[in-house]
Image (cartoon, rainbow, N blue to C red; front, side, top):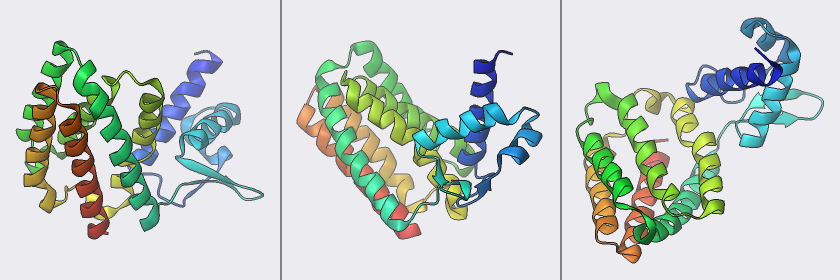
Amino acid sequence: MNHQQLHNVVSTQIRAAIHEGRLKPGQWLRQMQLAEELGVSQMPVREALKELAAEGLVEHIPYRGVRVIAFTAADIADFYTHRSVLEGMAAYSAATHMDEETLAVVRHLQQAMANHMEPAALAEYRRLNREFHERIYRASGRAYLIRTLDQMWDAFPTMLWGNFAQTTHQALPERDATDVAEHAAIVQALTERNPTAAEIHMREHIALAGRAFSASM
């Protein structure tokens, strides 16, 4: 394995540990310890931590080291507010730019989520949900929006679930029924090529999810 491959492997492993909650919010990450656990030298670990800091998953504290980001209630509110605006803008553009093949995939994902509402299917539901949102904002064709939302999805939603015990292995009950209807409304707006409706439904969907998550905290 060359240096770049090793660096990518280390980044992926640490990122997964953070997303899954095995590395906890506020936990200090010691290069030597991580290197020993992963069976590598400290160099790829150091580079991986720099990459994860750029992604917003960890933070460097001068003279103390690197630790996993811990989210506050304000961070959560800001995240969902930003997402609702940006994904709303992306949905507006996607309504007129999305090709029929992508639209068919989005419809399939929406139906698949509706068929995976049981608690045992939570991990699969969250995977489908992420792909649903990604397909839509990528169809916008707006490069800056896509890059920004990619970074937000990498740094926040999955990590948020792992940060809080009550959402790691269970969904928010009050969202089960409304999620299905909200996703259906977004798909309907995209199908009708109605950019204004697509933006409104996407913004409302994410804003409601944010309020429910904040209330559960």
